[in-house]
Structure formats: C-alpha cells, structure tokens
Length: 206
Image (cartoon, rainbow, N blue to C red; front, side, top):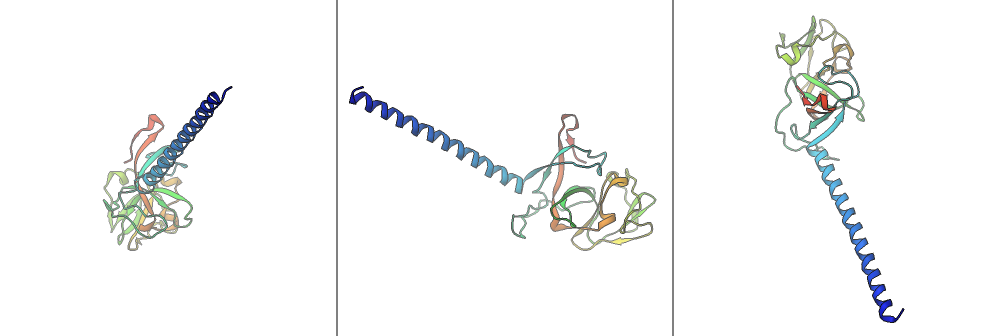
C-alpha cells in the first residue's frame, strides 16, 4: 500500500471513529434530556402509581395503575418546604395520594372525608360532618364501620387546622384516619385523576 492509500485509509478511519463518537454523544444527550424531562414532569405535574391493596374497592382495585395530578394542590419543590401555587383546594370526596404520616417512606391513597376545622363522626354507617349527614354520593354510597381510636361509635372528632380526615371506600378493609388520625396538608402529593391500566379499567377516578 502506497503512502497515499495509507493516508486515505487512516483519514477514513478517523472520520468513522469521530462519527461513531458523535452518534454516541447524541444518544447520551437525548437520554439525559429525556430523563430530566421525565423527572421534571414526575416531580411537578403527573406521577404514576399502582394500587397495591383493596382498601379503595370498588373505586380502585388491586393492580390498577393511576395517574396523579401533582400540580393541582401545589407541587412541593424537592429538598425544600416550598410549594408551587395551588390551582385548587382539596375538597371533600377527592381521592388523594399522600405521604403516610406514621411512615414517610410510604404513600397512601384514600378519599377526603373531613376538612380542616370540621367535626366528623361515624354513625350507623354514615358520615356526619358538623352533626349533619353527608349526602355527597361519593361518600353516602359507602357503609363506614366504627373502628379505631378515631372512629369509635359516638365519638365526634374535631379535625385540626391544615389537616384532613381520610377514609378508604372499602371501610371493612382500610387502615385510614379512623386508626391513625389526620393527614397534614404538607403531606398531600396530589389528586388521583385517571386509571390508565389495565385497558378494561381505563376511566376517570371519581
């Protein structure tokens, strides 16, 4: 091989190596950008959760995969106590995902029953708020059992400021506010919006 041919071969090899490195760099950059965007969306906008138990039957059943709107109540900025402005306040009947007050490594999903400053009582399977029975169909269609320190028959509980009383729709099989008390506003992660998996379960969460 003459010098001219060898030089051409070396040049082509270098160009091929540079092209390969450029392609790898583009792939790495694309993956990093996609990862950053996914984490940004997960942190501030929407996060997927999977239902592990039957405590919310029949609204949500074991294995349902849901999307939770984290922006609606004001997403929390990681590693700070700062929240973004909320678009709405938590309402009675909302199905929420929150950090479990007794174990911050766990996330729970329940339905808001009582709001800050209200009194709540369970009587004959019915929720009473400020001594009046709740007529909202999301709550009145369930039968609630008198169980736990906060759910005993005849016990009227006042909900502290900036905290919420939450119950599972499957009252016979739900560890909820009846047993461990209240959910601080700061523990709220978001509102359950839609079941997206499995296909035969796709629907809005109501």
